[in-house]
Length: 220
Image (cartoon, rainbow, N blue to C red; front, side, top):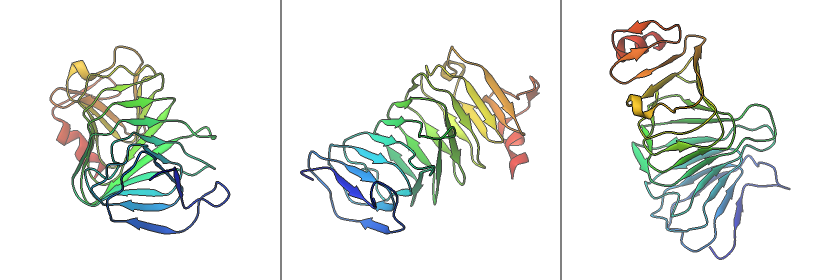
């Protein structure tokens, strides 16, 4: 890539097209994604990916190349990440609120996803893992807050410092240890949501649960 490439944009708005890029992508530029796109090559491009709308399927651990992934909802759309198998991705992730009051990134597919890079919350954001666990093993930072929804757990195992608090609206937010809980911001669960530790767990009402699995089974 010698210059930035728009995928699926029509006058800056999403297209209904489905795109598959299975070859290796290299170069200093990046991708702007507005439609359902699959990246499955051994990619090394360094300009990063801006995900505005549609789904981005990660078909390899290096699908995003060497740059950052920026999720920026456009036109009221909620982008999503999809994996074709268990995936581990080392790229940094920036979650930037869109033009509407609600910004969400859904994660689904045929396996779990671990994001090993730094996650920066630029504002309030909802993460929605719907099928398998989503693990944030790198640091989660930034001024924003994190809301968790969905049927699968979000696991936060890094040393986190985001400022805006943690809520669970029917989802499950699981901290790997006490050290993973940010020092600032409230912990709040509602609509049957769960916030706790991977070993010693607590619910939003302040009651302690005997184990995470017992508590999580109520979502199935």
